[in-house]
Amino acid sequence: MELKYETIIGLEVHCQLLTKTKAFCSCPTTFGSLPNSNVCPICLGMPGVLPVLNKQIVDFTILMGLATNCTISNKSIFARKNYFYPDLPKGYQISQFENPICSKGFIEIELENNSTKIIGITRIHMEEDAGKSIHDLDIDTLVDVNRCGVPLIEIVSEPEMRSSKEAFKYLSAIKQIVTYLGICDGNMEEGSLRCDANVSVRKIGENNFRTKTEVKNMNSFRNVERALEFEIERQINLYEKGESVIHQTLLWDANKNVAIPMRSKEDAHDYRYFPDPDLVKVEVDEKWINEIKKTIPELPSKKLKRFITEFSLPKYDSEVLTTERDVAEYFEETIKNLNLKNPETFKLASNWIMTELLRVIKEEKVSIRLLKVLPINLAELIDAISNGKISGKIAKDIFAEMLLRGEKPDVIINKKGLIQLSDESEIEKIITKILDENPEVVVKFREGKKQLIGFFVGEVMKLTSGKANPKIVNQILLKKLNNAN
Image 1 (cartoon, helix red, strand yellow):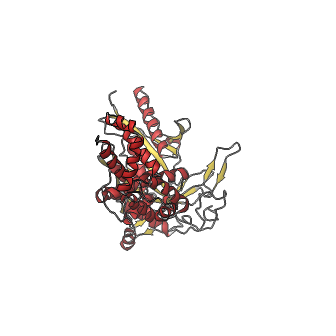
Image 2 (cartoon, one colour):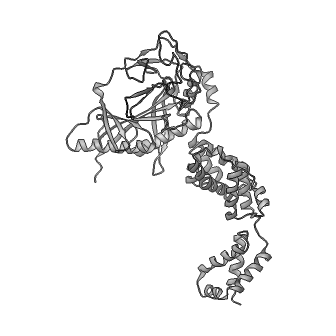
Image 3 (cartoon, one colour):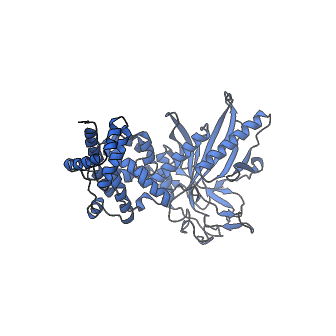
């Protein structure tokens, strides 16, 4: 089918900041507390109270602005965004409107064909969260205002994404950056990372934007992609039938895989923004910006490229290892503690982390930092494999012990007598015995059934309890089997 339309997508991403207290009061931001327990007169908007800005919010926002190539405004103001909703007891939300703290930034995403694309960031501003209305109960709607006043940053992109996959890549990059910076945990399921999408389509070759819709309620990366694909297809089908797209807000229903109209934008509230009279201007000088700049860690895109060049890792490995900062740092600590430092041991370390450690993390849903296998001990295990002290098969048994007890590999090896048998004369005696006991299999091998080498290797491993050095076993076996005498 001929491609007739192109997609225009812009994302508004809300990130809950990892501060211990709320934006304008000392109430805790703890997730999962009893409903309506983390509240005070300030975040409830009681008469006569005065909000005081949490400085760490400004630090975190500047940090994100610098990490995404934004211009940091020396002066910015807070505004009141006025609207009524049951979970907003003040009747307004403190946000930034005309003069945000960060603007005109960008991030780079990698496309499927290995090319890159720059996505512009219009603005990043500070604001407070509203509460939470709970509708999915068999009783009346309930309201939990614990979230009122929890600090957020809103990251508004330019409408420069042209597919749901590009939007997925952009959102993934945003999550990576905020988690690397340590300013947000990026958990969409708990609502600490939320995404609204503005979507429109137009015929290829058109320059003007057509009517857009806003899609909300997407609580996972996969749902963002699915919701966008649904809405793109819906709009194209409307245009193909000669109908119009209505400017409206849609809620994504993940169970039914449909976007349901919430309200028409024509009926939306006028938020009547005006400067908050209780809060002073936020003034940021160059000294403050430079202090924040010093705290920026190596970001994921740069780290990925360095892993490829410095450690000779495949691109796939580097992508997996740099997805999360803790995993990347665990890998680097492992490399630092290796005795044998070469591309082979670097790749071996990568394999063990990607297959064994990440498997355990996924199964147990824990951070890599909470596992009992320390990087220094994993390095010791890899060295033991590399220098022939143990086989890869025995290493897996040792690793299981390390997971349970956190013991050093050498302690387990010595305690269980697991040192690999590499004495060639000893291995040759064992192989000679096996060949003498299986003359008919030897004949079949020499007649061309080369796959029978596996039978002999298995017998050697059985007699040595898996301790024989596989490389030496294969060398001696092939030498003897190919010598027909």
